[in-house]
Length: 157
Image 1 (spheres, one colour):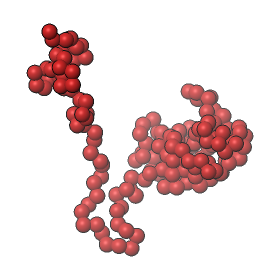
Image 2: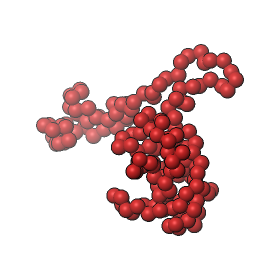
Image 3: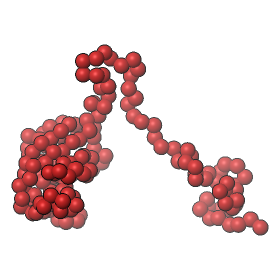
């Protein structure tokens, strides 16, 4: 979903001092319609924001029934934006329903249904992963043997 709007750069102390642009009511209503499917918690929504020629990733915050789009310091400096300036912003939020529709615009349906979620990362697939419960308890990279807690390492003579 792409949201294009303009607004004044405001300052909100929040957990740390930040500059924001408030999402207009009409755009906030559009975002609210998919918010429960795209939030990662606490109502925060990951987004890609373009301010002038600068594009950055951030998270949109819910506030007072609407949403606030943070404007990163690096973006403000690059674009010469100050507190109180009126700016035009483009916000792109990934709609999960768009990801599931893999058909070309005028083409046939795909042969296989798309995968709804990518495979989760398994630390055991990492080259440096060590499982103290497996094998003889010897770390393959150092030859050290663990005793007691898995993070306690003692050298075997």
